Length: 401
Length: 86
Image 1 (cartoon, rainbow over the protein chains, first blue to last red):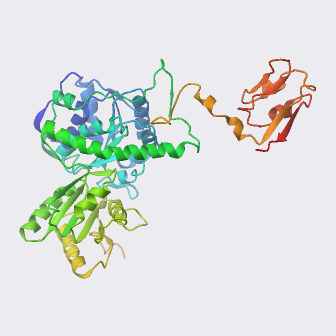
Image 2 (cartoon, rainbow over the protein chains, first blue to last red):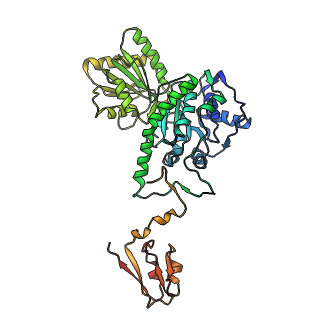
Image 3 (cartoon, each protein chain N blue to C red):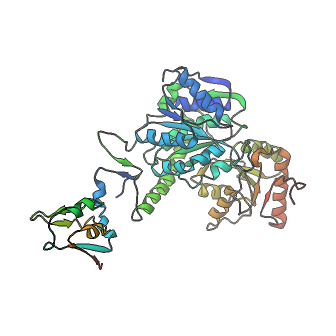
């Protein structure tokens, strides 16, 4: 890299900020296929390459399937790799997504969260990355553009840790974060170089020392390899924590580790969410707190690995938990975060009503008033118990019976 | 111990004794065998070889999967497929 990237506080588009953050991590190989709302990220990266601002090899491909496949090969020879995609593009990668994790290749990929077809829709919810939750990729969800920048750098540190060696999805809300212009501290190359050491792969493909990657494995060994992925995922918990803390030491910013909490200590009502919605919820909590409503907020920053213990500890003193999910696991009536929180509490001593709100699908706006109504419902649950366990928020009842 | 990822070393597939897949085992009769080598030519696994001490043929039972092609092709009917009790 020739150090031509600008740094310091600038007003930039969220997509530019993440492209800059990816570039400053010195990826050896970038491969991506443009798709709304991810397009500006890969346009900016290809511009950096064309301008000679970074030394990365940019591989043009004909599909997302090929983009991630190219990174599997590049990562196997020891390259630091980067991609970005969304929605249908991520779905097209699905087979390679599982392979990359199973082969323990530590790529970092930005997911610009967008709804899944059908109906086709380009706006934000979390359905695309939630659908990849069982793939073995670590998933980190960010609240704002600065967290996106800083988490992208942390993601390489986590992914490439030899005790983890798993790929990471950094998930950002499409349009809400990808197309917003706001002041962002763009990172300095020297500071990032000190924070993030060069990638040292555990094993590499090398003609001088031949090996086969992605071997056929029969029933005698398959389960054991899957168990190794689960163990690595479990070890990543402490690495996510360590990366957040060491980033704070180096750059002075901290966003929580697997979760973040806001006024949860004395809260009777705790709202749970991921992504940019957390920013809206902070304002609602501030407003309601000023009116004496004991409400708090829990941000799920890591969805994989799932922070079951951290969530149980944070909500233990509450009277009701409201989970706001920008996804729906069709056939369960609720979103994945809600289901997993309930599952993780079942064998614990924490016995609190958990109610689910499927919200903001396909980019439907989530105004403050809607969140205030959710808090009112929570107050009703405290007084009268659970009447409705989960619901679609702000449905147009005139359109559906 | 297995490595952290499904990565194979060269020739490590030799450790996978595919002969365990076999249900019928080819038994080679050295008296009937005229050493023509048809069995070696047709073996899809490349595991039929000439014996070290004669010009007749035998399979490497560590890797012979028991497909029976050698027995089918043998012009002297010198190979018999027999159910292998395990």
